[in-house]
Amino acid sequence: MPQPHIIVVGSGWAGFYLAEYLSTTKYSVTIISPRRTSAYTPLLASAACGLFNFYLAEEPVRSKTRKCRFVKANVLGVDFGSKKVHCAPAFEDDDDDISNEEFEMEYDYLVLAPGCVPNTFNTPGVAENALFMKNVSDAMAVRKLLFDLLEKASLPNCPVERKKELLHVAIVGGGPTGVEITAELDDLANKELRDLYPEVAGFLRISIYDVAPHILGAYDQKLHEYAHDALLKRHIGIETNSRIEKVDRHALYIKDKGRVPYGMLLWVTGNKAVPLVMNLAVRKSEKGLVRILTDNHLRVFKSKDSDEVYDNVFALGDAADIDGSSLPTTAEVAVQKAKYLVNYFNSRGTAGSSSVPFTYMEKQLVSYIGSHDGIIAGRGDREGWTGRSAWLAWRSGSFMWTRSWRNRIVILLTWLVNIIFGKEIAKM
Image 1: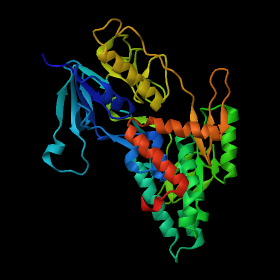
Image 2: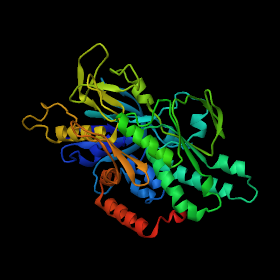
Image 3: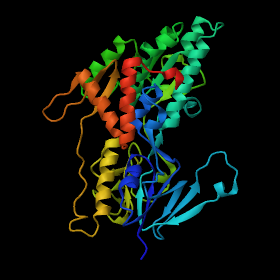
Image 4: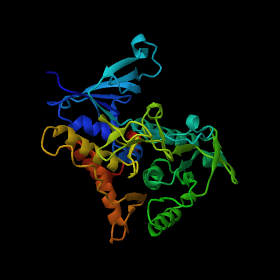
């Protein structure tokens, strides 16, 4: 008798965890994703700024120890009646016939975890001119552009005003991702870059732009004000209540502020649903980010007006939410839901295997704000705190996100070498 076939759509935090831990003695498991690697997103800013090599910030889906099948494709749609997914190969700029032939795959169980894409809010010019921070190729692009800008500013015929424009890093998004990439860049600028580029490093300027009234809005007032003041002391620009109207190759255009030249634009604000989520005829959220709605067993509701669910279709990760019990789009939520589903599938046939609903175990929110300083949100009666201990908690937490002990050891050794000898970022 053939094994039941589980198709997992997506190779992000949720999809990759399922690929790693679903029992391949009980099931035939297929991962369908346009990306053959899974990024450790909390490590991308550190990798971009040279704390360790890029390969340590991602994990390949294919592995000799991982017995699942991988298909490099985008899922375009799902026929829930016939239990089929409709797919298109995911190869860019490839005119090979096989790369353009769409195909279908049958499933017994379907897990939808396609993730999200950056939300440009339809701001003209963002897609063409901004960099994002969703995967390792994005982090590589940030590092390459940063050094290109430093080299341009170092040319003997580059005037001072042009140096200032080239070395202005504009970061749109004042949430944890935007603040953490700001912190890592500022650390790099104040250490290694001053030695490598002594003539121009002083011109490097970082600014955060956000439409909200303050940065790090997920934290309480005391903590986000502490972070705001700490960043200002290090001469980082913070422009809240900023509404960006358009972007071109060299500047942002901000309502009531006009043209602001930049050399690098990093867009790290908000998520947007992928086309698959928009196309599915299932119940979805109606406000904010469009997400597939599930019950508290992570089963997908059939429609907006029905309480019926698909017993063999599940959804999790950033693209899904529990109806009536909304959770944030974080790696922690995705992994906890993935653990729940792994336990559900791997224990099927045992007593009580499907009776316990998913419950989220909230963990404290931690952010790095630079110069070995951080903030940790309070929980319950315990107040949040700041300082070096918060930075150490953030750094150790980032370290533990990697699933490979080999990678953990290499990262730890790299950090120790960096402390003793400094980053050899120019060689990376």
